[in-house]
Length: 390
Image (tube, rainbow, N blue to C red; front, side, top):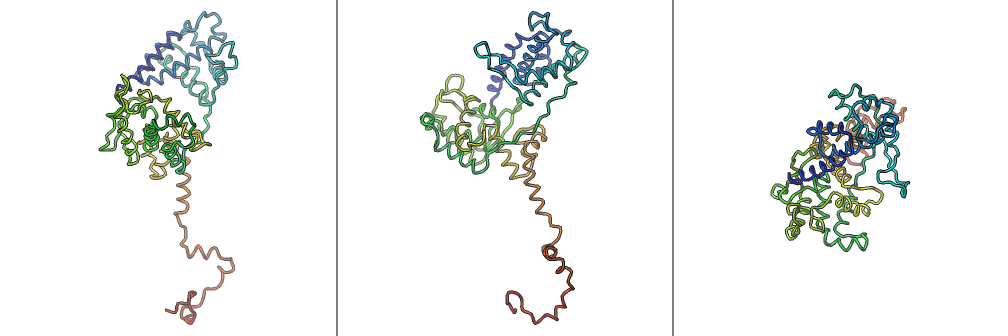
């Protein structure tokens, strides 16, 4: 991913953040200035949405009865919030009216499970932690509230035969609807390159979308990307990925991109840099046919790559490095289930007794306890079981 695309993406979320900040109290703006250099723009935008929801919740409590608007919430009022308010907030976000709902659509509600609640609590905790550290408030009630228990989710991934079926389907278009087939001939080379790149490198969707034409080195089989947090990295790809990328690159040379999208490697039919949403939709389109019982997304293709690499190497540190995980425990959590396969292998590898003794043990106790056979010279007239006299 080029620096210009990374900056463009950052600017997009900075502008979105500023829009939300117009609704929030001034104390929130101070918080976002304070964490600007330690968090990404997308993270801050997510915090802003969660804090806006928290402030709206507070406006409905007894604390804000006399306030005319949300932007009047200040440090003194925030210091009056208790752990009980935080717990009530978590209960509230379980099921609450959507911001876009109105009298005509009263049934539109938003629900949050354990992970959604945990993320919102994390945002409120970060906010209060900052204000408490700066001395703006004298208490930190969110720190007293237990985070929702997160149950492990099953890692959905494609099996080897499903991978083959998916790639074949991208090439053939078999099973697509008539309307989908109308565009398939124009996009199948691009789509094959995208799906193959996911399965052959395990890169994130944002990393793939941001690839520019000069980010790929076909001599070294390398592609330059920008990881989460803005760090550049170089991934190495294999022969199958190289072949798919070259086929698309040759076609890409004949496409004149729209102004401002000339550097983009993957283009939409509108000749603009392909979007994250478009990639999600194309993966879903093919995967729904190749693996109808699984909900496959680009991230699941990333998990499929991580699974394949771990099964082949057994090296969790290598998997963490290639996937760009900063903490190997993140990788271990996602692929811990696979260690059961290796444990079964270990159980068969270690032999406690040699085969001959093991066979004797399996005999009837009476046989195993019989007297020892006579000496070898006493049975020299017996023939071997196979009848060989030599």
